[in-house]
Image 1 (cartoon, helix red, strand yellow):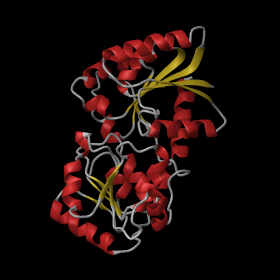
Image 2 (tube, helix red, strand yellow):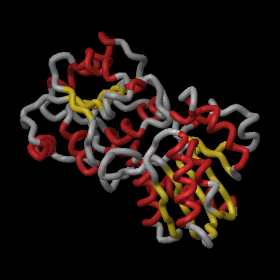
Image 3 (cartoon, one colour):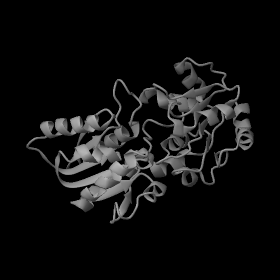
Image 4 (spheres, helix red, strand yellow):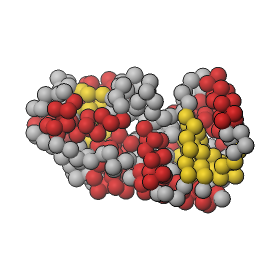
Amino acid sequence: MRALIVTNMYPSPARPGLGSFVADQVAALRRTGEVDVEVFAFDPGGAGAYLAAGRRLRASTRGTRYDIVHAHYGLTLWPALAARGRARLVTLHGTDLAHPRARPATLAGLRLYDLVAAVSAPLAATIPGWAAPGRVAILPCGVDLHRFGPLDRREARRRLGLDPRGPYLLFPADPGRAEKRHDLALAVAGDVPLLTLAGVGREQVPLLVNAANAVLVTSAREGFGLAVLEALACDVPVLATPVGVHPEALAGISGDLCAPFDERAWRAALAPHLAAPDPRVPGRERAERYSSDSTARRVIDAWRTLL
């Protein structure tokens, strides 16, 4: 089976952390040895960026017909039409359905695709029936358990140039993304240094997760919620708002918190983790349910169903 992934979310030298979850899914798909996967990635931007991407895609794939053309992110469904495919699939990630300009442009093109997918059930529920009258599949990207796992906390800090004695907290996003609510994480952190993922490459993220006493996910919304799963995969405590997959992923795990933001309650939940020299929670087994390898199998099954 020959598949083409079209996306505006993919790591590049200028944006090393962009779309790492899509890159992880591509790597997992390739590891199966069952599919031939090509990637056409372009930088996000305004309408001109999508028109230019469509022209480049048409030129680069002229004479080629894929079994599957799979667009990641709603607006990329438009340039992806420039590639010939037996079947078409689009995966929606969140901002494409939440942004006031991206949402109508995304919804307008969904009927052109054979299958519409969302990365979580709560996100799928925001797709109106008229836009996608058929079944909406749930196809998360998943956490790469080959990259994320427990590491010695002091060693992780040493490799990052941090004080091995800590403590540290991690805000697993770029503070510039308003919906991630960096301001709330800062309020909870207080005097404790709060690390972020601004300008961070993929290879450093597992070190940052393991270096932290806890991960703070204060998002106002999440299409999925991969940062929580990355923390769980490393057995690192995580405090998160009840959005995306967070309630399902964190249910019943001692030491973690999934609750609406309340500074006093969050500080109380965080206190034991700041006091402990090496706080851990039993999270990896839960993260295995959402591994990139298992979700890649779901994607391949969806492709085969379309064909």
